[in-house]
Every structure is written in C-alpha cells, then in structure tokens.
Length: 123
Length: 275
Image (cartoon, rainbow over all chains, first blue to last red; front, side, top):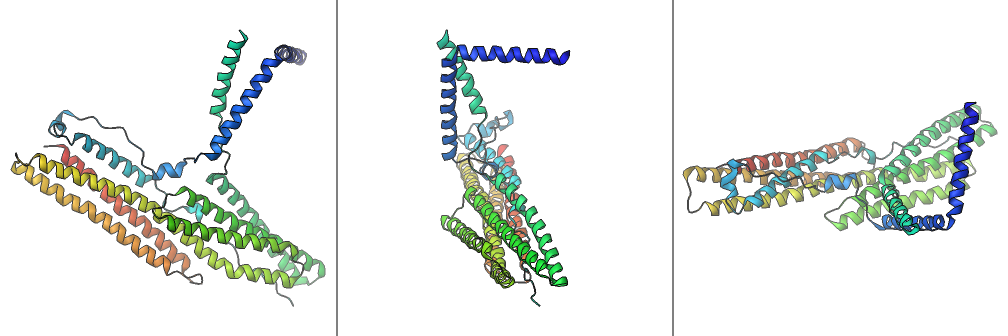
C-alpha cells in the first residue's frame, strides 16, 4: 500500500513538474541558456586565472589583525612611530606563522624507489 | 510578472554557479593522487615481473619466456610512467614557488622537462620489444639513466626547499630593516630629552638588533654550504641518500636560525613598547 502511495505521489510530482515546464517552456529554455553561458564564462575565467593554493598561502605572509595601542603604550603612541611599530608587530607575527607553516621536507617530492635490475639472464 | 520571475531565477542560479566552482586545471593534489596510483601499479607490475622471471629461469620453456618478456615490458612501461609522473609533480611544485632567481627556476624546469622527454621516448620504444635481448637492451638504457634522474630529482627538490627558505629570509630582511628604522626614529625622538634609562634602553635595542642580523647571516652561510655540498653530489655516490638527507636537515637548520631571529624581533618589539 505504501509503495502504491509512493508511486502515485511520485507520478503526481513528475506530471506537475512536466506540465509546469511545458507551460513555461520559453522561460525555462532562456534560463538554461543563461546558466550555460555563465557557467562557461566562470570556467574560462578559472582556466586563465592563477590559483592560489595552500603552498602559496604558506609562503606568502598573511596580514594579522592590528593590535590596539594600550594605555601603557602612551609614550610610544605620542610619537610618529606608533603606526610603523604596529605594522612591524603585525609583520613579525605573520613571519613567525610563515616559518611555522613552511613544509621544508616535501616528502611528496622524493624520487620513487624504483628497481634498476631488470635483466633476465639468457642461458 | 514573468520578467520579475526571470530575474529572481537568474540571480539564484548565479549564486549556485559561483558556489560550485571546480578548477579546470590539474592541481598538485590531483597529480599527487595520480602518482600514488602509479606507484601502487608499479609495485604490482614489479611483483608480476619477478614471478615471471623466476619461472623462466627455473623452467626455461618458451611459454615462460613469452610471459617473462610480457611482464618485463609491462614493468618497464609502468616504471617509466611513474618516473614521468614524479617529474610532473616536481614541475607543478616549481610552478607554484616564487623563486628569487628566474634563471634558477627556468633551469630546474628545463631539467625536469628533459627527464620527462627521455622517459616518454623510452616509453614509446617498449611496445616494439619482442625478444629477451631487446628487453635487456631497453633495461640497460634506463638503468644508466635512473641514477642520474634520481640525482637531478634531489637537486630540484633541494632548490625548491632553498627557495622557500630564501623567501622567508627576504621577508625577514624587510622586517629587520623596518625595525632598524624604528629604533633610529626612537633615537631621534628622544635626542633632546634623553634620560639615562632611555639611553640604556636604546643601546640594548641596538645590541639586540645586531643579534637579529647575525641570525640572518648564519642562515645565509648555511645556505651557501648546502649549495656547495649539493653541487658536489654525483649519480653513482654510494652515500647519495645520506648526503642528501643531511642537506635537507641543514635546510631546516637554516630556517631555524630565522625562527630564532624572529623571537629576538618579538623581544625587541616588547622592549620598545614601554618607557
């Protein structure tokens, strides 16, 4: 019984969908055409755009959020060097992160362990 | 009404399209997976080859000879494909790294390309193999090349690792220069109203900055030693693997100098913060 209900509901949905599509076929065709054009454009853009990957983000320093000047830093903050100081603090933090994340072993790039002795003795 | 529906559907569709943006290019992870698949096929082909070879050498029948030749051909083919995939991986990594010297980058790419060309040509000759003599001749050809390919692969890998450390060193140098400028600005700011404590502080910051620069010098010296030792490696060196592993450890050591220098920079920044 449940199977029959299920089949009935399924047929109903399919029928209604088909009626809707057929009734608005011009609109549907237009939308499909637009989607296809946009999809192809995105693919072409990605083909020609250099992609950033994990490695580049590892070796390219990323900016850390700037620290606010605390009340006890007021002497430094009164000088013109405050902005430069905060910039250096940010850069040092990102440099530290760069060193921590750098993969300096690259075990994926080791030459494969191939066997060179392939000769078959002729006797 | 229809126009409004159209516009709504259009923007919903755009959102979905931009969420699902597959990369059309084979990326490093894809190549790596292909390499691992080839490696597992290589291991299988090698086992099959050994079985067929031992069977022939035991029974010396024509059937076992034919099987041995076929398995040898399969093995040689998979081995060449594996090595080609390895050098393609190296090329993919070389493309990702921003080398400080384009000459070095191009030289490494050319070496990898030449290796791919050699093994591709060798691969093309394998289907024509029909006799045991031809199998052995083909094996000999690759046998002389493989130690040299192994060395070239190691040298390319070492250049990749050195390029990473040099990139870190370049940023380190920029930071050191900026820190030095800041210390000089502090000196200028407190020139007219210098207390003995401030004088002591500035002297301390100058000494600490020298230590930061020393770490960079140690890193540079280490990299020079590494480059010299890598240039001295030969394909037939019996301790090639050990010497290369030592070079990799030295590259890590070079980066550790910079890491220590960065911790000194943090101490300088902490010291500069307070009066």
